[in-house]
Amino acid sequence: MQQISRRAALALGAAGATLSLIGWSRDAQATPDAAKAEIAKFTGGKAPTAGKISIDLPEIAENGNTVPLSISVDAPMTADDHVTDVLVLAEGNPNPGVATFHFTPMSGKAEASTRIRLATTQNIVVTAKTSKGAFYTASKLVKVTIGGCGG
Amino acid sequence: MADTPKIRVPKTAKKGEIIEIKTLMPHIMESGQRKDKDGKIIPRKIINKFVAELDGKPVFSATLEPAIAANPYMQFYAKVEASGTFKFSWTDDDGTVTTAESKITVS
Image (cartoon, rainbow over all chains, first blue to last red; front, side, top):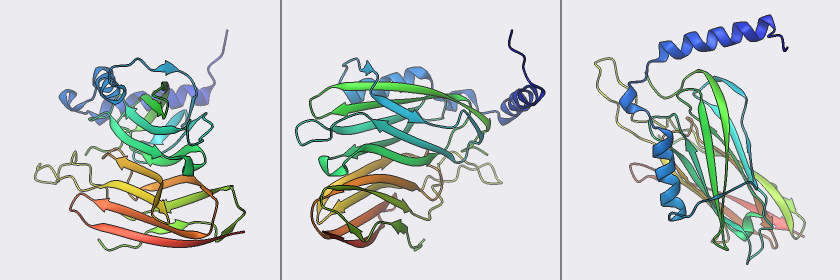
């Protein structure tokens, strides 16, 4: 049996309380389906393979207004085999789109970092396209204590 | 807003080296989701595009959505084979383009 420490219990309680206070109107929220539709548009209907991508995000984001995000795709980045585009989606934001990164062999590495806004606890879904026409995907759950964007 | 972007690019590098580049553009990134005190939606105004080039050749670019935090920060890499000039540009929803440049000497 795993004991929940007092600190973890307090954090969970606080997170729950804040979530109920934020109150996004329900119709303004993206759904995993909206994210899926964006991915289908990006891949042209092809189903992406899981893997090759690592997503670096805090497990718990205290402030949803600015959450550090790093993505990295395992690829040789040569002229005939490199990552061309990386689509980043947030399933629980008012709109799923976050950013699309475009790489070239001159990028050296298919790796980028930025800071994003998250409305609530949700999955971040990253899909990558390679110059050979292959698609990869990965997702990561991030818990958000205070949502960003609204007001 | 005519704020100046901050860029951090190495001044020198070895041929074939992969260098790290960091940029930050001061900008409100108004999401179009917020309401003012009268309950009216504040119109969206964001940087929707960022481009990094080395001597006119694309190195990295990004299409940005309102879910990018204020003062958009970008960290990425470039493989340098020869000396040249990096050019960075940020495009605002209103069409304004802000640019910054940095020279690199490759040995």
